[in-house]
Each structure stands twice: as structure tokens, then as C-alpha cells.
Length: 244
Image (tube, rainbow, N blue to C red; front, side, top):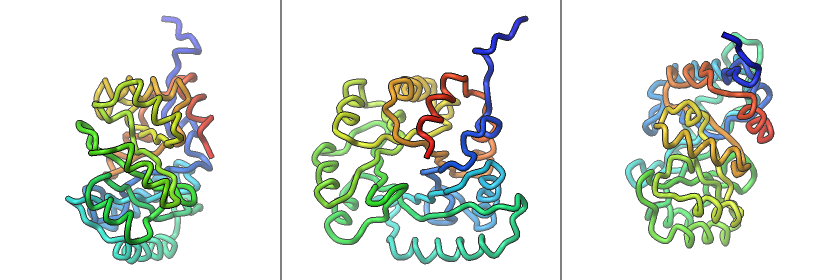
């Protein structure tokens, strides 16, 4: 069988997509949400990121009514992880630049936090990573996004391809309102389902994404993300255009 160049698939690791790049969404802070459970696994993931060439790693634990983390306590635990990581010898001979952000569910707790304390920002100055249920939109979503802006922040919507209640017109509306959209790389592998995969490809082809992340919750999941061979030349070119 002749294998034409356009049919070739690349893995995230082999493509160099993360080389000197940024992973803007992960759950690598151990023991605070449904992500990494032990500090040893947190460090193992950071070493995998080193090997993949990641330059900047954002760690974005959940903050929501079901997981009511406090920003101050997250900072304290992050400082421990960062100190231990920097003190370790790197197997790859390089270190990832680690930062703490958060992934806020747009629920009642978020509305309270937005009015009270400074929020943990992610990826760029004053950018706040937010999410919704994958099935139902939050009450007054547009109003909440506008309130975020009124407080001096820029809202970035995590993994919009996973929100099955959204239609193409919803994505276009968010994009034209200046809401930054963040792609989960595992979506391109069908990790969350075929419909989510199709939505991710549709958004990517139309240039609607602002950045991408691994949304890592487990060591094994990260290994699968790095080794998945699903990046066609077309998809890879689109992803590389988002690289910062």
C-alpha cells in the first residue's frame, strides 16, 4: 500500500509541538482535586514534560462548589511542589518553568470569589480559566463572562469542544465576543468521545482556539497524550500557529 505524505500521522511527542512551548491546563498539584494524587506522581509528570520539551507548565487545579479550594492554600502547596521539583536533579538536564493558575467552574462559588478575592490567573496576565458543565450551561453565562471582564480579567473558556450543549453559533458568538478558547489535546484523540473530537477539529480548522493544554489528571493519561499518533500535517500546522 502506498502511504501518501498527507496521510502521515504524528504523535505530540515526535511532532515537537510542546518543544519550547506552553501547556496551559493541567491538574498536576497533588491531592487537591480529581487530578494527581501523590507528590511523586506530580514530579513524574513534570519530568515527562521536560522530556517533551515543555518550556512553561501551568498547573490549574479545580475551584468549584464540589471542590472548594482556597487560593491561599493552593499557593502554599504549589510552593512546596515547586521547591521540591527545583531541588531535584533533572533526568533530561532541563527544568520546566512552573506556574500556578486555576480552573474555575462558573457556579455560585465563583460568583462569590469574583466579588471578593483576587483570582488565580492563568497563561497570561489577568487571564482567568473558566469552565462549565459539559451538559448544561450555567445560569446567565454571558452575564458572568461580562462580569469577569468588568473586574479587569480576560475570560478563557477551558475545553469548549466538550460542551455538548453548544452549537456552532454559540462558538462563533464566544469567539467574536473575544472569549479565548482553550483546546484539550486529548480531544483530538477521541479521549472524551467522537463528537468532542469532531468539535475540536471544527474549531481548530476555523482558527477559533487561542491555546492548548494537556488537561493532565494522571501519569498514564499524560503518556497517552504525548504518544498519541493523531496529528496530521494539517492539524499540526494549525496547532503550531497557536504556539507561544
